[in-house]
Image 1 (cartoon, rainbow, N blue to C red):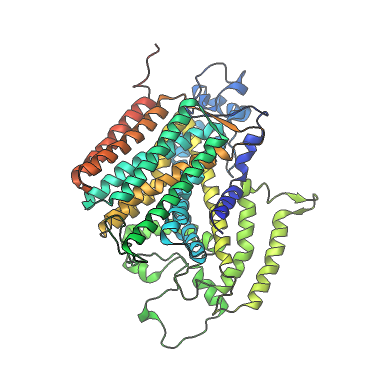
Image 2: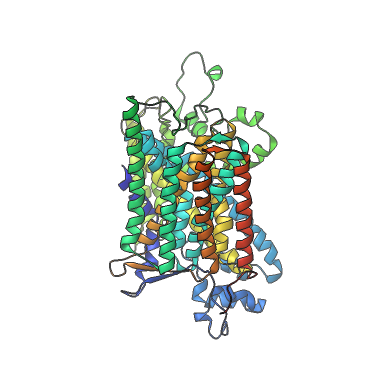
Length: 583
């Protein structure tokens, strides 16, 4: 399984994104509104069919529910919960603040679900796949690792692009995260630990990122993206991967060594794994002092209960109170993920083989996939109107689980254990896709409640939420003495997000009769966002070499002040304090 498998899994988990494009008239370009709002006009009740859902707050609270139910624009695409009907029909108007509070808490929890799934289940399985395919560290880093780290961003972008009403979320999130990471995160690294940047990787990544931003700017300027341009995004990323591999090969050939030591352009990989948190996948990995002197065979029941425990009690005792509070919120998510997503760990002698749990995964993982694909539509389908698809999956999965349990042992993984890495990759991708769909729907609901455009929600809440994990990991890496690696990750990771997010997101909207997707940036904020990202890249591209790649606190302060200024301008534009003149 290589790049084709990644694309196949992404296409499978996002197959529902094609439904909207297929509904368009043949030959008519799909129009994606990036502004997020439509100017008011008309009576909501008499002309509701042609009115944007954003107008609901302009009418009497007694008419909110009827407006939401009668207006086709208020129907959310995909997802398991109808947030608009919940806030405007279930909650009375006087309890609107309570509904918003509950939605905000659920939004935060969705970010936790995305983070835990990507970090503890998606990325480890990608690592196992790359190890099984015997990929080099550089190739794995710019392909599988980039996909693992950028999965929440890319899935959110593809889901947002699947609906014209939320396309602004995708542009806002991709550009907003780019501005945030290249200013706040990069500046924070320079503030935490001044360092000398790796020159050639920095210049390579910034040039590729500037090309990607320029292409997106041109697409927005012309207001459309064709099939060739969408494929060009993906082709540019493949060319970027090829460039990274070629540069590595040339550097090694010049040095005449198989594995070069870290040089001025290649940051040293950390070997400290002290804080690798237990998530059940490694909860049985005790220190040497806790291991029994003589090996003993554990029963299947004990292996199952130990593997399903998301807590490491020794770590729990020595951690501070705020870590424990956060862990309490993560435990339900981790427990459900442990039940449905297998994890293969190449660093362990037994490859994390848990016979009873892995046999259970043969049943639960396919069931999860079919019940989350297109919000359960396929899973609930009745075969010949009699037998549901989920029942067939359970029947086949149970038979396979029994066969595997009978033919394997607790002590040694089977030869086909690597198949569980592919199964875990697919199952965790479905979890991320489901959480991303709910995330996009709830952000659109909050935008309607507060009458905010999708673009500003994308560049703030969605961009911050998807970037918060990278922020903490990069700053922690810098504090531990690896600022060059953290700084390289700032620019290398977001190249994948913009090229694959835009390219794949628009490509999935095209059909054989419709090879053009229209993008309508009718909001000044979209141009401010694109310009701010381009300007921040130009600033780093000029200032970093000018400082001889010696980055200190002054550089970090300038980047953070730049982001604050950009955020002020963006919010003033959103609230129409800054706007274009009528002339």
